[in-house]
Structures are given as C-alpha cells and as structure tokens.
Length: 364
Figure 1 (spheres, rainbow, N blue to C red):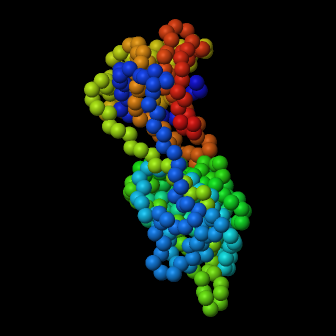
Figure 2 (figure 1 turned 135 degrees about the horizontal axis):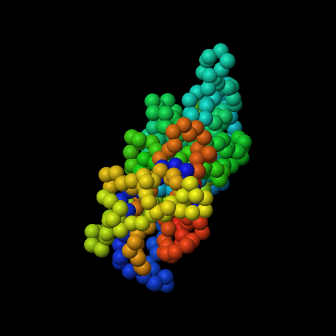
Figure 3 (figure 1 turned 30 degrees about the horizontal axis):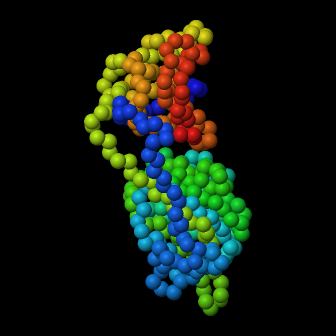
C-alpha cells in the first residue's frame, strides 16, 4: 500500500453483522446495457416538430444541421451512456476557438488579448440532463471534446478547471470516436477513446432529465451552404445502462463505526524518526469531525478495529479532497484503501498482512 498523498474523508462508515450467503447462493442482480437507438428508426426519441434532418441511414443516426435537438422520450437519473460518433465534415468559415490554460482559464497572448486559434470546425454535443448547462461538447477545438461549456466561465475555479478536458482525445474528422458518459447525481465522468477526459461535478444541473443530442448551426437553402461549425454528425451503437439507487438499509443489524471517537480502534504509523519501525500513537493523522473521519496521509499508516469480525457487510462513503494548487489532474495520486481480515502481528514494514480493497482515486 502506497502513501496517501492527500487528505481522505470517509463518511458514515457502518458495518452489518448479517451473515453473507455462500458464493453459490449469492443473489446477483445484473444491470446490462440496452439500446437507446435501435438502428432502424427514431423509436424512443422525440424529433423536432418542424422539418428536420435526423435520419437513419444503414443503421447510423445521421444529422445535417436542419431542424433542432433530438430528445429521448424517457427521463434518466443515474446512468452510463455509451455511443460512437463522428463528424462527416467541417463547415463554413474558420472558427475562432478559444485556447485554454491547464486551470481552464483562457490563455492570454503576448499582446494581453484572450487567445484564439482559427480552425475548421463542426459542433454538436450531448445534454446529459436535458438542458444546455449539462452539455458535453462534441467539436474540433484544440482542448478536445468533452468540455462542459456551461462551467468554463464559472466564478468557481474548481468548476472552471473541472470543465476542461484533461487531455484532447478526439480522432480526426471523418473517423469514429467512442465515448462513455457516466452521470451520478450532479457528477459526470467522460471517457473518450479510452481516455478519461472529464471527472467533475456540475452543481445545479439537476438529477433527472431526458438525454439530448444537440443541433448546432444552420443551412441556407438559397446558397446551399452551412454556417460555420454546423452539426454534420453521425451516431451509432447508442446504449444506456441505468444505475439503480441503492436501497436504504434498515437500522436493524447495523453498527456505526468511527462517528464520535476512536474507542475500540488501534493505530500503526511509519516512525519517521526511526526508519523501518512504526509507532502506534495517533498524533492528528486521523481525526473525526461531525461524524466524518479525515486522514491527512502523513505519516503513512492505518487504523483498525480491535474487535474481530467474520462475515459482514461494510458500507461507507469515501472522498478525496482536491489538493490546493493542483493544475493537472493527471498528476493527482490520491491513494487509500480498506484493509479486510487484518492479521495481528508483524506485516510488511508498517503494513499488516491482509486483503486490501484498493482505494486509489483512479481505480476505485
């Protein structure tokens, strides 16, 4: 187990002594993906009332920037959305795309002016909560697709930073891209072509709404041309998996751990003054504030219950606090975990012999 590199907070840790079923008897519920687009027609979607160009061509959902948004008939709460998309072509005059710093702010050029770069562009997006303030951008900008446009001008620097893709991951115009969007409450995670590009919260977007495929741009029938950055886009293999809300556990059989004090808890930390040894006194590494367990991560170590448990269910919430001054998410190395079945006695340096459920921020 590596050192914890940032503050860790665990909320409402509880344990139940209800015996677990044997592996062969355990009831497993499956939540598979279902088609949101059937590849044949617009069943399950609400098309624009006026004339539009949302069409199904050879199993592909095709759009040519005339009409309006395409909206699911159903509202969705927590879900994982998977789909493939590509732009057929860029349109119109070059588009002045903003250039961003790592913190999400717009870059300033040598003359002190906000920096832009002229690009050939196409533009669409996915409204994850039905409205533009929940839009995941699909476009050709240098920062890459996935940007949460509504947050890029927020007064909250964390939202500005969180709105910017961590890395540009688009394939060239004309090639298919794979995207996965996970919505849980007002939190959003976007994976584009296998790379995590957004992992953020969007306060105020709501928690239940239809999913919208965005219309952008327009077509001039007289000149037979499209305006700049029109949505000449295609989608296919649109699938969704709804994430069920956990059933609230009853009070019967549940015991709350670590909500007030450290009674029944023992500690072990690296002794920073004596290499290779450890100490057992907690000097502020772990604290409990208003029922929340906080860990500074220094020195490295762990706490565990004095009581021995056999068959149980352990439930709790875990959150990493963003370190001050972090400008690049890829450099964040939050690391913790749950140590199950800890064996008393010597382990490996400070760490005990146990089964660890890893809690790294990128692998939870």
